[in-house]
Image (cartoon, rainbow, N blue to C red; front, side, top):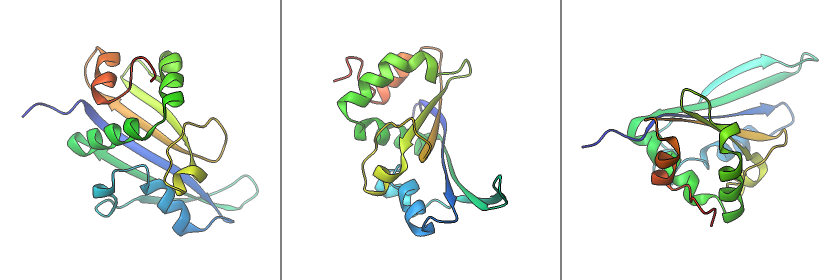
Length: 148
């Protein structure tokens, strides 16, 4: 058995007081492959916002094979345009330790669609990659080199 290509995946979002907790959790879990959604327990942390309003952070962390399944699921769910954007912005999204940073539209994730998004209402995903040849690892995980 070979080592997974992914060390860890962290998926997190915030839930504001005006949001339905069930819907926020559903949007977060929709980033995961269906077979993992019932087996994860989100880490929940409540903090105070700038005006004293409660903000809840939900986070899921997966390692090894499960993390790799999440990365493969995510890349297979992204559309052609998002693959192109990732290819064009890969240098800004990858840090020197091999973490790939993505932001997904939380509202679309609630409806089951995974779409890159640079706004505020997002689900943040950090994919920790193994190996030095990161572009090759990403292609192996399903990021299309030609964007299409």
